[in-house]
Image (spheres, rainbow, N blue to C red):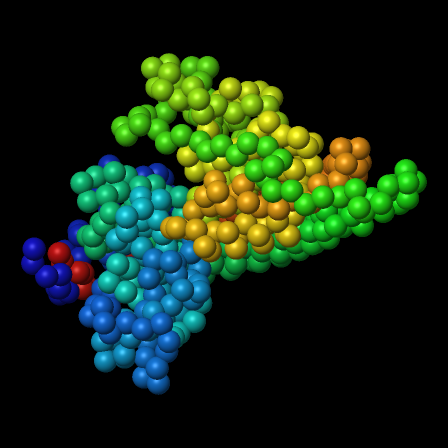
Length: 467
């Protein structure tokens, strides 16, 4: 394929190539707005290429940080996992500038492809790698608004559609260049940005307060769990009933119950959304100490026959053993008695202790730390059944277990509203998406229909990248 290049055009030819035909415009916008192709508003730049042996984890005196897919968040950049190369590999256009948009354009994940982060400053020692594409808004437009377009659902839906094609793991430059974008007059661009930033600032403040409340809950929860499973929480109870700490024992999970793994589905097996009577519990369904029933999928009857020995029972304690959420613990609800369990989780069944006590105990920081230590020594970061069985758990009498569960459940019930704050955070993110959708439809109440059409902005720009 011929290399992309800038080509000088007459104004008429430029507009003919830059404007989106009316029958291809996604939706109606105000009369003085235009639908244009992204290509007319931005320049694209390729990422830095370098030999594998040139990369290092520590920064040298003349090195540049090279961002990769993991550095790109929705709307932001992070610098948690860094690679450095000598600046001799980096051209001037590859240093990240304020309002640049960095897009994940090549990845093995269809969920990550197209993710876009926005730079909030100019960098002299940060560039981007070959699997990313940099979108740089041009000076004659409001860069902040152009950058925000890449956070809209409109943009992500276009990328998802492209990702379903043949090149599902690569977004070519021309795909980005040909995306339609609504363009308001310059004064309106600036008013929209001011409105967006004002609304986002209020939402971010609310989100910060909510997150502080969540963090406070988690701190209180960790403290009371520590007291519960060290015996401090029920000290008065033991005194009242004449029971000493010598009634507590340390037992392994293998002594407390049977530890059993789940079952990997046969290759090529597809789960169905229709309720066949044979629910299959995936690792992603195991959250918040229980199973998210509303997200369950099901096995067909013929596949169920091959998995009948891997079903769970009511009040089995589950623990995830693979993945980012390894060590998550909870109870199997009665509605899923007989359900099938993923191979990415294990269950502890036939317990000689209170199942609720065990699930709460295993979620405490002390036991979670032990689990993490077991993971570090396990092959491929997997928590093996052997390592689960060898975990030591503090076990008081059944009566004291019941008292601990009563106190903890009472505490957790009162604090439940804190957990529900997670929904508020999700709603805030959805509200931002809704604000952006209205912004790019001219629905924020800022548009002045008497202002000159945005077409005037394109008059002085007579270069277009031709692929």
